[in-house]
Image (cartoon, rainbow, N blue to C red; front, top):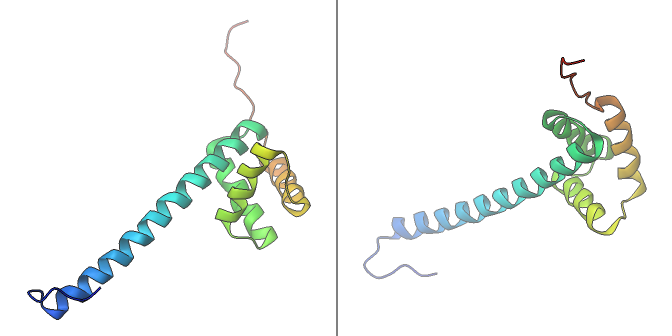
Amino acid sequence: MTPHPSEPPDDHARITELEEEVDQLRHAVGAHAVVDQAIGMVVALGRVAPEQGWAVLKEVSQHTNIKLREVAELIILWGREGEMPAEIRVELQEALERHGPTQIPESGQD
């Protein structure tokens, strides 16, 4: 993109910088949505609290050396298609065993 003749050169650099920042923010928002969906699946299937679901995802990512977003994408894909790489499945199961299931509190009524 060439600067408009009325724009000083500094404005062109600033516009380019802002366009790059917008692209990064779009990517971050998309990644956040994927991670949130995966946490929801872990919470529902593993019967853990959302904080534990986040911890489970982080642990699977760390133990498999796979980026968190990629782990989240694989978990979502598993929910859709029923397939998951063995390495992820094993780590997910072990992490869930460490963190869950969350016990439902008693109602206090007998």
